[in-house]
Image 1 (tube, rainbow, N blue to C red):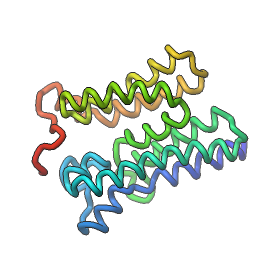
Image 2: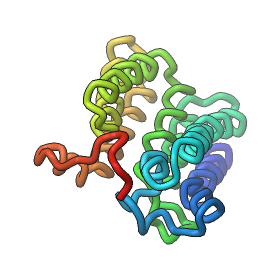
Image 3: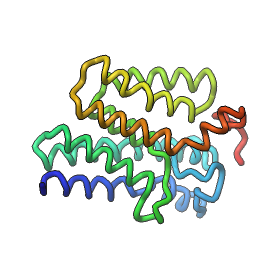
Length: 199
């Protein structure tokens, strides 16, 4: 039990480190959640602070997911269930961070880190599809949702272990839950496109 619970707790606390909030404070002295889309993530960092800080935030958020999976593996001796649950915990932390009043981001970058670590090929295929869609439409939210939706599909098609399927389905549900507003704006044709003028 200890080998399962402790890495999940550590991963949640790790995920709760909101790099977009910290970087925005260091670079511009602002709370990024009060600007742009109000989201504490890499896309809003791009909109408010520019490419350099956004890339930095994206890589750190991806890194949180990767590290959480390795923490789960190290504590459990490689249990795939603990690895998946630790990854999920880091995303929960990113979305609802204890250090920042439980108001965080949407978890896509951290989801990318988790899925690339536990299911590299399915996540790679889903990621390629998402990137192509973002390039064509310039809707990051749409690409994010496609990544979240296709990952469990590829996990299933490539006959990956059951924990990876369940984990990817939960991550998909998280993504759609956190993108409710974006989905409504996409349907209304009001969603912000990548490269649009900063708000």
